[in-house]
Length: 504
Image (cartoon, rainbow, N blue to C red; front, side, top):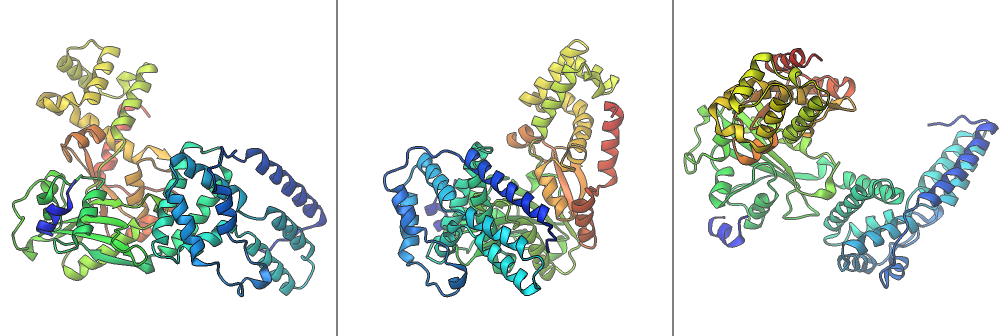
């Protein structure tokens, strides 16, 4: 981590019969019962918790006075924020549980209006629309009003971003027990998606002349290739490099999502040449040597903005920025890590061993080479030896083993990226991100990341997702709508080899 002193030094319309109305009434009663049955019990309340909530969470104004009611005093929002910040982790969970359960939607009023809407289906359109509008308004939770008021006070938006991070953490640990917390999370996400729409964001290029607080945060938030020291950071914002961030007026000094770009002659096949070579630290850029833009790291900095799409828009904005600066530039590509590959591979080897299918993953000749290199017996011992090699990364210290395993790991990795799916989409989150953006799975790179972290996560393999600008819209639509993954001949060839060997 880089300290401040060091940086300072360097700088529908519904058509209902009476039968459907009766069914809806039954369903509404049943849903009310389910709400009571599955509500998460709130543990012993902190002293003053209920009192402060009842005081600062104002009722939703009536439908008739919704545009006339004065907002609650700003002090309510400030008091809520100050109180919440004093709570420890468990008390925050209780507090948010009570907020979501006791200050949400008035379900009784919603049920009555839903029944009234059914009664108006034979009336004129104006009446139907008015009842629909009343019903829509009645679905506003009380806490949504509070969040809207908090967003207007100084530091309020950042407070709500951090609050949602706490909510997401609660959900991750108590997924099936917190329906009201899930509703609160959905409300927060909807509000944040509006407040952080791309039209309200500012693209900022980070340089060595940027405020030291920003440089410090760029260092802290780097999640893909950790910044080692001030020289490393200076290199990443210096010649032949670009660093961009989205910022928001309501969160000054806080980069929301950060993109690091290398300007190169060709599409890079390893990260070492980008983050570990310092020969050009103080050199002047030669525009004739800049033909490609390599997106080698993109990091979201705010956990509370999970699910709010910013990275996709950042890449598109940066492409336009670079095209303006370098009109001749024609190649845009990522150089991406493959998190999860090694752990997936361990699971696959365990599964094949259990099913007695270990021999299916490698060819007969490859197994013989593994057996000889590890001095292991054929069959299960050889599978166990291979698992140990990958788990301990011992194979990287032997040129012979590395040569034996290269074709094996490359085709297994290609299958992991291309063939392993979740709900029809790529299982790997980085692949899914770039494919949604319209990129092509272009090239797998052996020895792409030889750092201990790179070897442990993906056996040192990295992948280029190529952005062919004339095809990104079509690719994105094909992937999102038909789950089609555009891939190069290299990737398809490796996948075919895997299928042939594993007899899929």
